[in-house]
Length: 191
Image 1 (cartoon, rainbow, N blue to C red):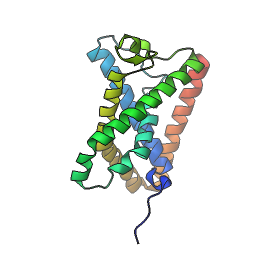
Image 2 (image 1 turned 30 degrees about the vertical axis):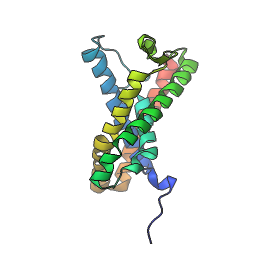
Image 3 (image 1 turned 45 degrees about the vertical axis):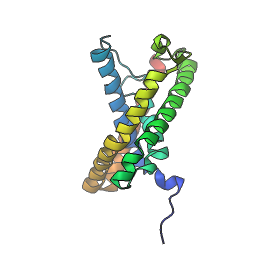
Image 4 (image 1 turned 180 degrees about the vertical axis):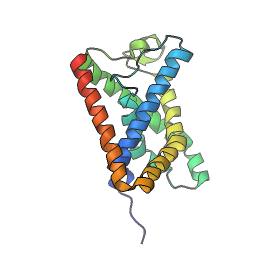
């Protein structure tokens, strides 16, 4: 009898989800800073909405990719995974663009503005909140996240779990949650 895949079985364990969220949030911050400093030559500024070196929107986006798109390629033969690259690209682009649009409204409600108002300069944009060019990069990023980074991050989680056990994985996840919660509280109080 084959095991039926359910919505819940597609989602990683809570400790894995927290680790993946944090790794992608840090990766996203590094990507944003790289663009700002080396591509656009604007100089360094903290690209996140929190104080720490992370952009939570990348963590949430990655978790959405893992939940909604990753099951299409995980544990599939190589040929099948390769054939699905265009689908993964389109789904990642749509999910990330929708998340960015929603995030812009949330940040505007909380902070009075959103950090990427530079999309007004893009030829194809919606209210300066989302634009075609970044959306295409989101699709490419989703492909890179799911085909390259996610298998690596799963190995990191397996290493933590195998080396220290489930308890260690839970302690690491709890420490991450506490760091993000403290940063969020301080960010909301001081900004």
